[in-house]
Length: 311
Image (cartoon, rainbow, N blue to C red; front, side, top):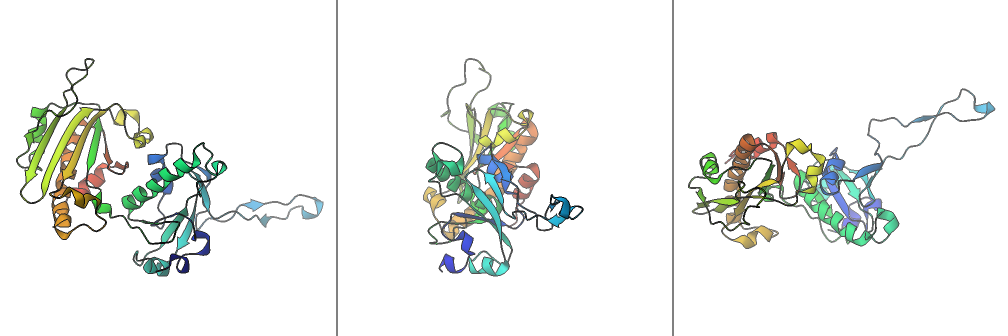
């Protein structure tokens, strides 16, 4: 398939993020770029253009419709859009029969375009963000070279981290997580020692192994830095104590495979609810905010949905 023959002309030769129609892109951008703001808001489909009153004596009392741009401009990397793609285009791209919104990135070679020094580096980061954002909401990325459609699998983002202000002791965590992780045990102390300023906050790990599905490990420690997305959250809703809940599949190379094996997908489907239940349990006890492996906040209702075993 030649993308230039499928997508509208304004998208040809541009790096494009494709999202389900109506997706609010600014919160996705703010997760990676806290300063992301609308330089020009997009015009809602049902919104009428602004009225303008011409000046001059002969126009007195006459009101005409002033044209307004229908696309927005997000101050991130000159991200502009949306361009609405209808169901026919979506099907041609292999993205199902649904309407989509397309957002284009700037070229990255003009510092004036991004409003920042190091435009190319910022553009590279923005391209990474498009993949993470597409995975988060079930979208896709159309690279500027038009070579293919990249549709990251949302289910591949299994790992979760709870950011809390409350450190829990290992003996308290094990009985909490065992309903979701049968056989969970305190692992080796392979983490950094506690700081002298807070000797009660002991880093630890808890691991549960599965016969066919690998292992799930909880690593808890105080962090020096928190994800950028937490800058969008009230400071009272998180802390620097991180509980990383991570899956180690039987074959770790499958995590990077573009098309993982069927055995990997089956194991992932069995483990994902357990990871979510552990994160939800720790959140109910310690409070805080859960962030996924793509750097986006996972609200409690999504945790509950992830924790349902649909097999």
